[in-house]
Amino acid sequence: MMDRDTAIGGGSSRFPVTRASVVESLRSDDADARRRACERLVALYWKPLYKYARLKWNRSNEDAKDLIQGFFTIALERESLATFDPSRASFRTFLRLLLDRYASNELKSASCIKRGGDTVTLDFDAAEDELARIAASRPDPEELLRREWVRSLFGDAVDRLRSELDDSGRAQQFRLFESVDLDDAASRPSYRELAARLGLTETKVTNDLAAARRRFRAIVLETLRDVTASELEFRAEVRAVLGIEP
Image (spheres, rainbow, N blue to C red):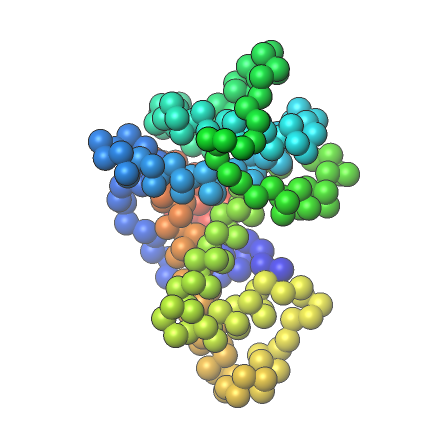
């Protein structure tokens, strides 16, 4: 399976240029920009926060679903995410603290918003299956949140890479990336085997795989730029996620 070294390996050492991030768009005067920013952040963070909630408070599957859907529904309605202050914490820490406060209030009032109606709709089945595989080890909830955020980040980058390469007629590059960096190591083919299977030269396999890896790394960095609000936070997240010094 893909690991951190895959995201680091190969390609230019240049990082995305500073630009307005998704987090900064939360405070935009444009309501559509705020909505798009919220939707993007929900897509990246809901699954790590769901798993965190399940372990942190030992909530049942159904209760945790209600908690997370209620949390994001209220956050979007009240635009709570726009209160983020980058001088006080990273955005991931801000979200965790916001969820902690929401969960504490819900536990006190026992009035968790039920799924259905005007709520955020999320697909929890995959998250529950993933959680079942790790719950027995009882990981620290905050460390789990960090690991699952990286997992969500990389999963999002894989989806974007697949879409980009398919749309640009380079689906073969993604198949190479998938075969070498996403499949289990035990079943990983050699470059020679891939070349024979796809009717390519080994040099072509090497070059196409390197190109896909470079783009994957660039997507990860672009997303980290999107979900941070300052150069300092961006660089800290790069170190934490990729283990390299920007």
